[in-house]
Image (cartoon, rainbow, N blue to C red; front, side, top):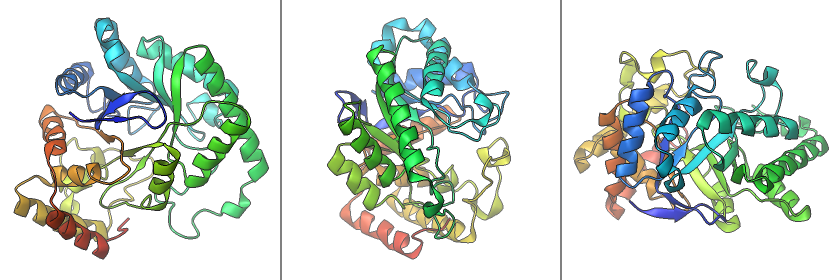
Length: 350
C-alpha cells in the first residue's frame, strides 16, 4: 500500500480510504467488522464516515455507521492509533438533524461530542463539514444557471465561516479533533477559509472531499490545482459514480439490493442516456485491458495528479477485494490516452 501526506498535516494516509456509508443499512456490524479487518490487513489506515450515515439517509439510520465503527473500536482499542479516522458534521436541510439548521459554531461543539461518543474514541483525526451552508454547485447543481451565486449574502456567509472556524479551533485546542477539512465545497470556500484562518490565527483546512470520477470531472483542473498549490489533500468520493461505472446499472438494470433500488435523496441524477453510453465504452476498454470496469475507473482516479486518497465503498467482500486490487494497477500512457478519448466524447454526462 502506498501512502500520501494529508495536506498540510503531519498525517500519512493510505492511497485507499475505506468508505462506510452502507454500514447500518445495506451492511450490518458483522459485514463492517469484516471489511475493516480486511482493509487493515491490506495496509489501509484511513476510514471515512459521517454522522449522516447510513446512506440513503433517514432518521432511523442517523448515526448508525459511526456507532458500528465505535463498536469495532471498543473491541480493538489497541488499533486506534493505527487509524486515521475521519467523520463529518451534517450540513443544513436534514430535518431530523438539529431540525435542519445550518452548521454553526455551537452545533459543531455538540456534533463533535456526539460523534466521539458514537465512535467510542477520544479524538477524531479529520473532522469535515459535509456540505457548506450556502448552496454549492454539487449534486447535479453544477450546470450554468442552477445556482445564483449573486444572491448569496457574502458578508453573512463569511461571518458564519469565521464562527465555524473558531469552534473547530476550540475542538482542536481541547484535543477532540486533530485536523479539519471540507466536503462538497468550491475554490471560493477553500480560499475563504484559508484567508480567515490566516487573519485570525486559526487552524487551516487540510483536506476536501468532492465527487470525482470518469463521469464527473468538474473539479479538474481548477479546484485540484488550487488544492495542490495550497497543500489541501484532495479526496475523491464516489469514484465509481455511485456504482454506475461498474456497469451493473447498464440499460436500466437494477440488481436486487443494489444502491439504486433504494430511495435517493437527490434522485438518480446520474442515470442519463449519455452516462449509460459512456459506461458501455469504459466497459469495452476494461475488457481490452483485462481488468474489471470498476478497477479501470479506480486506477484512473488514483493516477490523477493531485489526488491524495480515493474513498471507496463496498457492500460485499468480493467487491472490496476487487476495488483494493485496482490500486496495484498502473495504466499505461496508451491506456490513459484511450480513456481520455472516451472522456472527451462524454465530458459531463450527468
